[in-house]
Image (cartoon, rainbow, N blue to C red; front, side):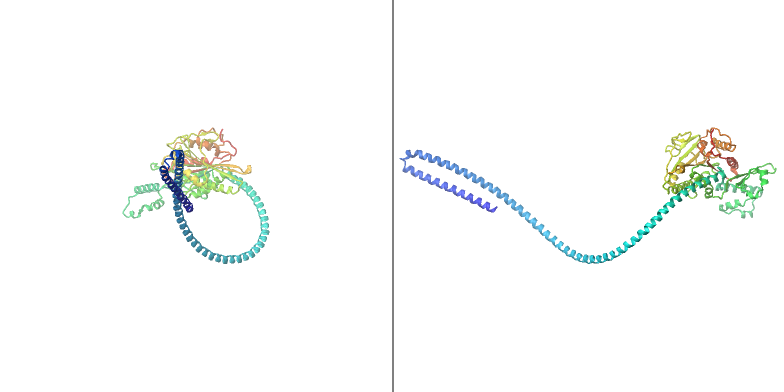
Length: 576
């Protein structure tokens, strides 16, 4: 670029020198012309034309020179512009050169770092070489072990072949045993059903609850009042009184004057003759006895003639019996439902006699419903261990109050909610069937339903129907079955509830083996499947041992006696 600039400058200087020479020549020619004018004034006329021609040529040359001068100046300006551009580029290149120098310095520093790393890497490589040599030695050892392992694998394959043959024989045996288990289970199912039939498709349990604290205090007050009528307490007798409320129960237990309307005679202590004479021909050594005595009456000084009624039931649970005792006796009914039979369990008794506690209980003492749910889900898990079986469990909760049926699983149910009208014909329709996954979900459903019941805290005037549908499906149609377990918490027997009377009439008609009329009660209609067709029914009659509840207790005993004498006929239709 610098050479080009120098060449252009030389051309520019040459052009300027040429222009100067031409100007000098023009000046000399002007001088010569003036001189020639003076010398050749005479010849002016002769050479005027030539002079004019020369002047014209001179003007033409002048114009040409000026044009060339302008062109040279334009070229010079262009060269100066290019020179300025080149200068800028030179500055830019200089800046780029500085940046390149900085980058080179950075690369040199990186090179130093990489060199140091390479040195360290070389040291690591040397160590790796040593490790590789060590690994090579280990590979040789492992190769030797591999050969030994191959030999061992060959032996294991032969052993595996033998064991596979054993497994095949075991699977064949397992299939055979499963078939035998299935057959044995069918035999067990039929035998269990036969045992239930021989024991009675209708069975009655009576449960007497313990006295509550308020009743104990009432007995104590009555005992103190009766004692004060006989004699006045003296200062010496005050020492024999209970010193604290904690001794209340001991004081009442030791009191001979506290009347107890319920007693539990031992069967061996009563002769058959006296039983026939006093209590009628009904006697069964497999039953358990319970006596209900009439409280003493004021007969104006005459001798008391208190009546005593003795009843015999399948089981009599005394106040000391636990929830576990009740469950042990009721568990065969739940097994019947799992085996595919319709089963009904209902609790009868006055309000406060322990019906809800017996059926539901609490966390520490669960009742029949939680225990039944647990057993049903355990049976489901055991059956589904066999892939051929599929078990479905569905739950429904209904409430009957004042001839109205409510679905307690519906969000609109409850005292303040919308009444759920159910169409009850050949089967219950319109209600919700929940499909719980485990017993915890059933517990939540039951708790929700209890909150939605239309009942007050001090009375029970509605029936609660808890139903579990247990359906088994398998590859074999003969193994398919549907069981139904209905557990009913009846309304308090002290209320005038027509459905309870209808239920009693139905059972009495069964006892008399009469043709049953068409039922109008929603309760008995919903329980119709449990009153025939080889169904199983368990009546749990709950009562109070306190003397104030004597009449209701006697009423409950008579109802239990009526149920106990009933008999469910297989393949017998319930309705006319």
